[in-house]
Amino acid sequence: MNIAFVAAEVAPWSKTGGLGDVCGALPRALAARGHRVITVSPRYRDYPDAWDTGVRSRIHLFGQDHEVAFFHAAAATDGGTCHHLFVDHPSFRRSGIYGDASGAYADNLFRFALLSRAGIEAAALVPLFGRDAAGDPGGEPPFAAGKNNGRGPEPLGEDVVFHVNDWHTALVPLYLEALYRPAGRFTRAATVLGIHNAGHQGNFAAHKFAGLDISTRWWPHVDMDGQVNLLKTGAVLADKLVAVSPTYAREVCGELGFGLGGVFSARGRDLVGIVNGIGEDWSPATDVNLARTFTADDLAGKLECKRALQRELGLAQRDVPILALIARLDPQKGVDLVMQALPWLMQQDIQLVLLGSGNKALEQQMREMEWANPEKARGWVGFNEALAHRIEAGADLFLMPSRFEPCGLNQLYSLRYGTVPIVHATGGLADTVETLDPARDRGTGWAFRHFSVESFVDAMGWALLTWWKFPEAWAAMQQRGMRQDWSWTRSAAAYERVYAEVLGRRA
Ligand code: ADP
Image 1 (cartoon, rainbow, N blue to C red):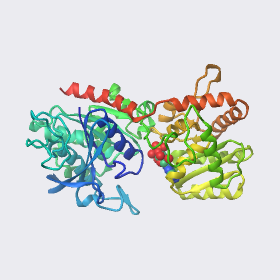
Image 2: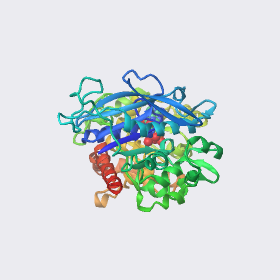
Image 3: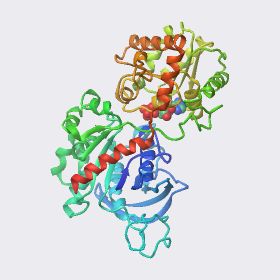
């Protein structure tokens, strides 16, 4: 299949969260499975590995023509090359992706309409894919001219699935309907809208609609309560919607749709959920950040990682459970629940390790927690990727009491590292963590249903009891979690089925 990802973030070039991770990893997993895949995202800065293709496109928006250039970086995978295109335009070259200290950029509607248009043009224009001697799509020479068999490389083409993501690129299905298909172009192209977080919808004043360069008869598809709402546009027009977990797919039909619940639920079976995968850099068998690697069959290395973590953080090297949390300090993450549970936690024979940054009040509470409990608690304020790996490896229990969580990654890392997760049963957390049932040899952690400090403490109480009294049940639970497959290969196979369905319908 021909697959074009259009997204505001593609890691490692640009990332503020899970969106960037998905749009970096999933396209590669699909290219590895033999598909022809491109990503199209903005060129926010000079990327040393991305070269000017020389291809230009003129796009009419907000009353004038804008020229964009396409830069290109190739990423080799086991199965084929994943082609990353970057749209070059002055409006993308700012300090932030969406805004800066003074708020969201005022021209974001223009910027992301431009990205959406450029994403469509890229599929039609940028020659990336080699042909074999007969001129059919075949081998994959690098972009450079002369490295082909004289027929020249060809673009991805118009028989393509556009996988667009969140509000930023949700205009792609509308532009296909309003501008391209009436001209006989992209008639068999299909669209999939990825929903990573429905809390952000791309709301703009109604008068800005005129800048989008489409007929006013499309206004009802864009209008939400008298405003432009880009996520709604995508939700109405994309052939299929994929939320980042099955439970989140149901939740966005209600309160967690933040006003779009009715729009999502009207899509019925065209709204599905697929849990994200985790990258190969999160594997305890090969993780370069660890004191010692380990596997489900040999957990000795995990104990060494625990001792190393205790040494690194200046905690006593005692045999007590380490409870950990790593998160953006945002109300969504429920860190306030941990703070409310602190009096109870500090009465237990445990060590507590929190790593996070964000909300200033929560940062201060983390510091105060450490000052008041120097023997038991560490609050590391900041962003530290290597430490995050060592905490996942060294801790016994991982806390994720999120208010809502579209997918969540840390609980998946925890499962793979034998660090038993305690989660609020919401979104992807509900889909990936099953509460321990020792009688039936089932379960990988604890998922508490009610978002309250009582339920959270109750779950932690069961976990501590199990850790102290039932080490065999504990080890079996760890191993069950570690042996689960949360790889991108699994998710990519599920996405393939969605693409095949929508392409089939359009054909
Ligand atoms: P979200 O995308 O909502 O932030 P996820 O659980 O999906 O939540 O992903 C968060 C990612 O960011 C994880 O890889 C997590 O380890 C990482 N992370 C968050 N805060 C920190 C931090 N302070 N230091 C290191 N890594 C962090």
